[in-house]
Image (cartoon, rainbow, N blue to C red; front, top):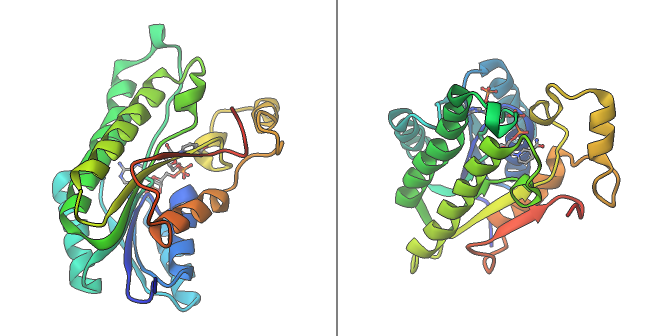
Length: 244
Ligand code: NDP
């Protein structure tokens, strides 16, 4: 499959896994729309890195949970690049705490971005993605590990998995794959924030590779799903170096 004229939208592409995915898909030959929430400077750096390597990209600010902004994101993509072939929904937030004491306002914020955001992006993706395309949502390996303090976040990603698998079946006949990618701990601000070095070291050793995942480890799998992997559909792919 030639990626030459294919187009990707990557949400949360100003930083972390989304940024690595945007750079990787551009390297694969796709034109890339770099979505971000508020960090225009970092989004600009993602765009500049793609352009400096000879690729095509532009940035669009949109809160993924805002249906008007997300519709505008897809409209801008179609206007500038002519269509949409891959949608990677990497925008996400996490807060940790024991369920019994968890702030319901934090719960609502997590679910607004991770659940409503994924749903809104998936809605537009289902309407726009062309035949031969792919929709890739980010879940988490914590979904399966069931670690204490992760209830609100893991619950949001459980919802992401449910909607990904159902959408895969709803798109019957369209030749569009929908999958969830479930990383283990990846060395981004998202993971490192609020953890002391000893905790980071302990978590890094949970997998038999004895290191943290890097954004490129996840981007490689996203690239595979967005490109050649036409027979992987309606799945949750655990990408965590062998962590249980
Ligand atoms: P980062 O915190 O590094 O980056 C988050 C990105 O999401 C930023 O680009 C941010 O934009 C964007 N974002 C946040 N909220 C919104 C919103 N409402 N609308 C649009 N964009 C938004 O996170 P990671 O790259 O580490 O995580 C990416 C995804 O991977 C998340 O869904 C996360 O749940 C998942 N994941 C991460 C793991 C990890 O260990 N890092 C492990 C398992 C899953 P801005 O810069 O403008 O704020």
